[in-house]
Image 1 (cartoon, rainbow, N blue to C red):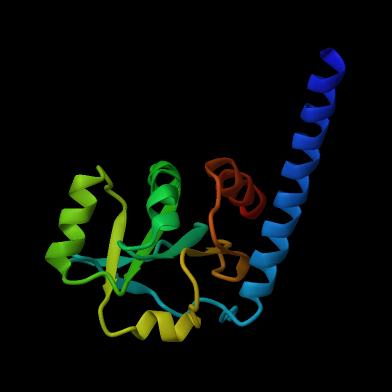
Image 2 (image 1 turned 135 degrees about the vertical axis):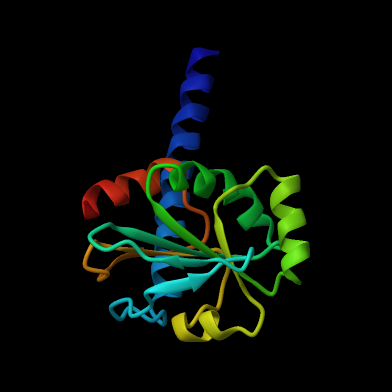
Length: 164
């Protein structure tokens, strides 16, 4: 019986490692077409109409998501957590009106900063093709990491530790 458990545990571990490798390769492939230029945006207009000025000399996360995206919903708690410790701007794409997005945020207890990309201006600028997509910039606003697909809280924190 112990041999069977060991065998299944080993196979499970191998499967998880292979899945992680596959997901990272897929994310890398999907990120090839993203706009990786230095960030040239200094302000964002948030859902409430206020203007948020990007902080100088601080790393920045820009996270693209959609209210209808199941992976985005699953990842939202990770973005919420990291937004408490780092500068995070999220951009909601194809997600309806400001009121619909505010309702979604309230229903899911999310408080991170949100820009509504109603016209697709930001998604075009960054060349977004899949959701969620995350950009991590260093304090000089040079791109350091991109992630297309789900990102864990630990993954976000470890990347931010590398860009400090």
